[in-house]
Image (cartoon, rainbow, N blue to C red; front, side, top):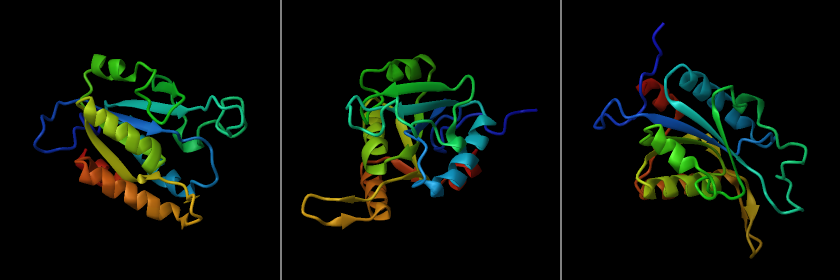
Length: 190
């Protein structure tokens, strides 16, 4: 049976044989991210039916008080985003998986020219990865419904809703020339 997605450059004007990689970032188990389960499940099911690479990015803090340390409960991947055998896992201690890892070298070694990003947080890890990847010469697509942000309160006491921050992050990425699609749009183009 032939794979459903031979290649995933996603841009009609690009060469259809340009290899792509899906980067799933910081999808640690969290009850605050239920809206990502369906899009990530559909995305990974579809992507695994093709020939593109899948890279899981795990971020573990080095700070002793942080909840995202590798030795804390809840730092396993969400069930919908558990890496399968053969899928690359990159562990980082920053929002940027290109820093202090061999991710860039590995992607270039495998001929990857296009990155598709999913995960959390839109204004943190996803934005950082997208902008750094763009600087390294990759074309980048961010999947709006397969990313999320977390609410926060700023230093002046103003509370920001997660959806507002997510929307702002996507708008800033688009302004920087990064493509933003939905999982449905991505899978339909495959």
